[in-house]
Length: 249
Figure 1 (cartoon, helix red, strand yellow):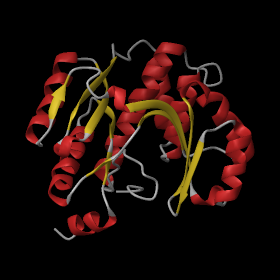
Figure 2 (cartoon, helix red, strand yellow):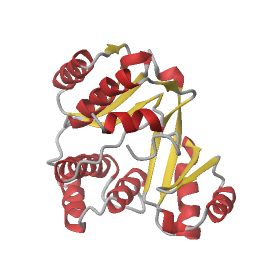
Figure 3 (tube, rainbow, N blue to C red):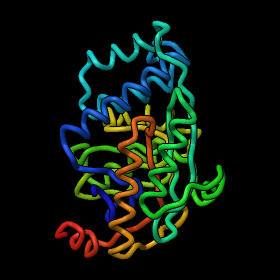
């Protein structure tokens, strides 16, 4: 789980390879298509599309795939996707936010609810845990973008709020409203980011023991495996010792 401790990053990221990569490309394509449908296919004139394409590039998504997704969005066959946010609790009282893009609200709600129920969680009403998170912008860079001091200086100049650096890279956060401006300033100083996106950042984190952690990670894996689910956020913290024990199971 990349960055679970050093970055205090509460968004669980799996390391499985081919299947995960295929599913990731599918989710990135859907976001590009929806962005193009909503705001047009001009990357420079469509901020949401620009961010979606930038994230796809950061994940090494082929150019042909990106262009096909844009063409689908502007060609009238993108479908009627709806953005939905689900909120609930996982094992150990961990707060969970799920973002989905779906063309079938009933299907999505049923599948997300099933994930919670089967993995020790409980789906709640909209707003039941959202107050525990702040909507912010997150911009990530790989380690080769520079050292911690260089990233900090560039972030301050760009108007960012915080920088967390570790062996896996750098995570820069900024106000949600400033994500476009800050990302452009950072790109001018450091080059293109690995990803630029709005996230739900927890105000506090909940420590999770070994047993609860195992079930919680199953819940998050199940949610992320859902085709309609784009992002999953949760306010947990798992220690290195617990992660090591889980790896040995």
